[in-house]
Amino acid sequence: MQLTPHFTLAELTASNTAQREGLDNTPAPEILPRLVLLAQMLERIRTQLDVPIIVTSGYRAPAVNKAVGGVTSSDHQQGHAADIVAPGYGTPLQVARALAPLVSVLGIGQLIYERVGGKYWVHVSTRVPERPANRVITMTGQGAQLGIQDGH
Image (cartoon, rainbow, N blue to C red; front, side):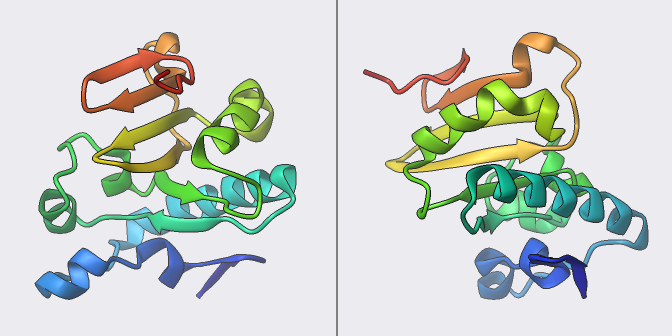
């Protein structure tokens, strides 16, 4: 199902972990409108960066979220979030730095630059966190830091 010109339901629900573990990652009907809003936000990001966006993780059913080690309060379970990379634009750090000043303009509720176990990606969510300070953060194995931090 095509959600927006460049994003499909299959793309936002694809999960290697679900496939490998034999888990169903089909979203409940009430999640679908949120996935449309997520795809619309991804379209705005794609337009801003002027390159294709690769979704590395989108919607996660609770069992899939648990299997990948996601937190129980993960926005991925509610259809609000996607982890993305945009190699045509640059590194995840460059993508996060480009998007950080534009979160309100692009309708990004939360932007997280994640650096975990030698892997790097950008987490974007349509949900605005309760604490404004948590709107743009960096997550590493050592925890959260405000803003986009490169670790050097």
